[in-house]
Length: 303
Image 1: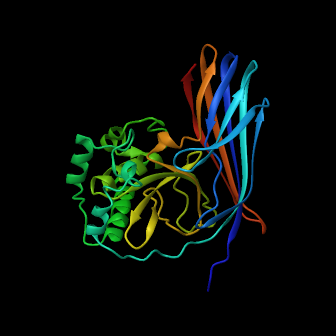
Image 2: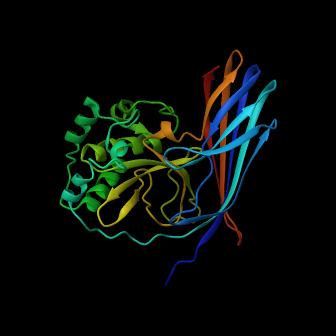
Image 3: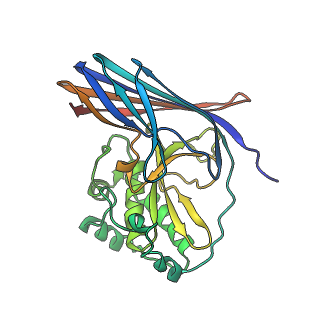
């Protein structure tokens, strides 16, 4: 029997509070999901307070972005994106092909950036020590190897909100054994690329209502990994939650690592610090159901 699609709504609110009035700001927003395999976007909008100008564009990975400009004094800035989507469970990918085919992709220009180290997913002595200690190595089948790698990372590290920050290097999670979804994604990407597998970072949300495995993620948004595999194309792996293509992952953007797809980034003109609060609500639409609300931690940035 074919599983019925699920409609859901996502509200993502980011609030900047400045220690002193900001004279203006320019931000890059990466908040708009795109229709694709497993999901269809029905509605999307962004509201701001105070009002701001928004210019849509696409980055070189094909992600939908908006450039936000505020040209006035303001003490707070609230950005709220709302989207309505239809989610479809994706069929299990076929496990075909072998490592010879994977190795043949290394020289292709479309995969070059996804097999090379990036700022937050790169080799290091700590990563090499982790791979040796856990005895991680490619098996005969690329698909099974990537699933085993994802499971190993989930079982090895403790999920601990607040243990790392958005720009933490890969060594932090490797040495402490604690991190969040973006850290686990960076570890998996770095190892997969070292084996020659094109791998990309995925930002989005995870709808956990009704999941018998319970909720693992507890940040404002979620992150997982997609690997390019023979005979299957891009396949998603979640090293934080025991869930793959089950129709609960809401995909927003892809890049080399978190730095490419941060939901908000930019600068403001002013003196002092800015505190950032993030709240995300994901809920089903239609029959009454539970609602998941998760909040990101505050962080400070210098103007």
